[in-house]
Image (cartoon, rainbow, N blue to C red; front, side, top):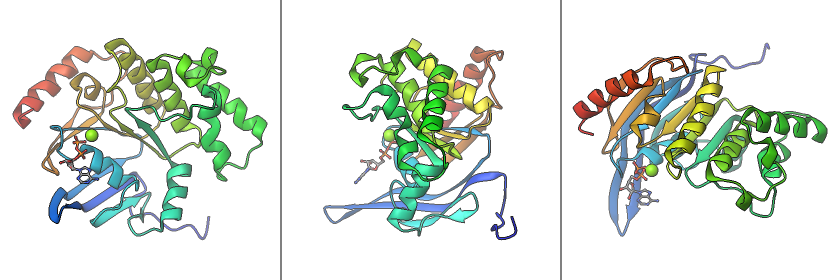
Length: 264
Ligand SMILES: Nc1ncnc2c1ncn2[C@@H]1O[C@H](COP(=O)(O)OP(=O)(O)O)[C@@H](O)[C@H]1O
Ligand SMILES: [Mg+2]
């Protein structure tokens, strides 16, 4: 398209430059993020690890525009989003970003299915009929093996099923990136594995993912891991893309050795 603004680097979905976030509480200044810079390429699956309180969630919130950065730039598909109005930012989050959290924020008075398609009903992005939206919702729920829970209330399904519904919901508006903050944090090992299997699957199909986790087994399935200490990236570990055929034990061993070097 002739009027399209050219991106600085078309491959990078996210470009973070000197990002700072400072909280002021009781007149004390807390510098939670201190000049953080990194990129996320299209199709990448970036894990973020680090000690509790190191700023991982704050980083995810600041990069995704859920929270305002104090200084620095976040370019999303080439455009600095740090100075956008709240309403414009909310529109970008709804249309172009997917979110998965540890606590599965779903509306209690809606079925699982209605929760999954809700963002599409709120968005003007896709110009489709309700019938088309519902068909895509069903397709996503089938893809993640939860179609039989479609008409259930959200308190009638397991944590693992609910989190897979959250993945479906995060994808309903065909986002450019999915942000996940401890998506397996509230799950047991087998549910966590199920959820990771789906995230790996969508990543292998092209989805771009930024995933905060304190679980090395989860991070071992990411293509790259950033290690945050005191609001700074202390190191970065390249694992390469994971596929179900790869030996996960070897990846976990390499990651764990590096995490030990990082002081994990
Ligand atoms: N809204 C807030 N107001 C003040 N301090 C905050 C706020 N949110 C987070 N913090 C502080 O910022 C630091 C980093 O928090 P967080 O990003 O949640 O860490 P992590 O996700 O790595 O555990 C912590 O010291 C936390 O107490
Ligand atoms: Mg956190």
